[in-house]
Image (cartoon, rainbow, N blue to C red):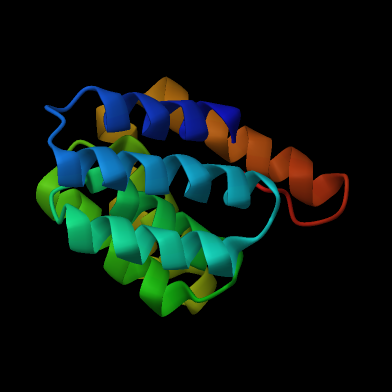
Length: 145
């Protein structure tokens, strides 16, 4: 989880910052903090505002999708991860979590396709995320991956 939030933070600061974009970055910073506090619905509201200010902010789509995934709103999560991938086809976490959302929805063929795409980008990262998920399920509770 910390890796994902750090990745989003880096994305927010590696772009050219205009006034609207700066406001969008501030909204995403706050949305990340709300995500850490498990306030996914409020985090999503801030992601929506950030996207209105800067529709090219890929990390905002990803975070909204990730929040929806954690809220078990899988259809919305898949849509946001797909929007993320339209903007950045190599966004590993979007591919991986879209696979997990598809799996949770029962779209096993789509999930396998996405898992294979994620593995094609980074087999070691895919293995790490999958093992982490297995440990979480073995030791109880839904982990915030």
